[in-house]
Amino acid sequence: MAHLAVGFLALGLLTLVLSNPAWFTVLLVIPIALSVAIFWYRTTADADGVTARSLRGSRTLPWSDIKGLRFDRSSWAIADLNDGTELRLPAVTFATLPLLTEVSGGRVPNPYA
Image (cartoon, rainbow, N blue to C red):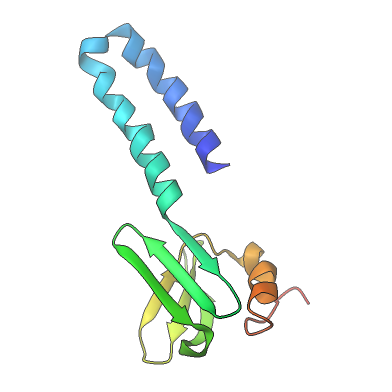
């Protein structure tokens, strides 16, 4: 869905690019960069653990290292780790917690149950 929004942004920018290609062609870098960021930011989870990818790299943790999940003003979850640090989980929202509950084998509680 996010790539669809980037496509509409690219169509909107095409009106500027086609009006003066010499000046505005560089604006097409914006939707390309947004699409790369959407592709790169992700959280993958399985029965063994969770992997969070961001532009700075990726980090894989077993479920035993995660003390709990919380949400702040942003929409993505933050994992509180046993060592006192935090790990932002891209694309994990409150609405996707039932999926995370299923994948984690019940280690993450389902708030809708």
